[in-house]
Length: 163
Image (cartoon, rainbow, N blue to C red; front, side, top):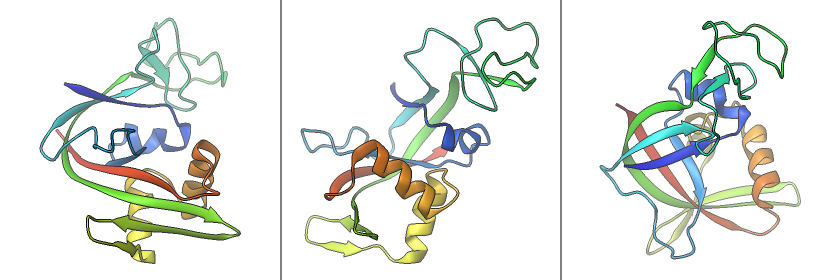
């Protein structure tokens, strides 16, 4: 089974609460989405980490687990822990979008075989919410830092239901 790994603390709570129901990933070089409709995938927090347990507050590794409420060495507070294996999902929708953040005029449009259609505010808000971000500004800022949206970038949106 294929895996999807996460590490952005901005979306950690939505993952833990299973409110996150999509991920947006850069278009693969071969231009083929990594997942298809109906396929199952395992979700992980920092999949490549040798650690299995992480702090629910900051998402950082906790090397020794004595109790479900161990002290996090990074945030120095007692918070619950979670296992890096977040669960299994089934892909329900796959589509392509292009995002740009140019001169304070950010925009996003959905790409189909025949056309490009601008995404309206309501659908924008749904994309932001389903991706686990609180606001459009947080969403755009994170993507701009990660992918430099000064020029248009194409992404694949994978939506799912938790199994």
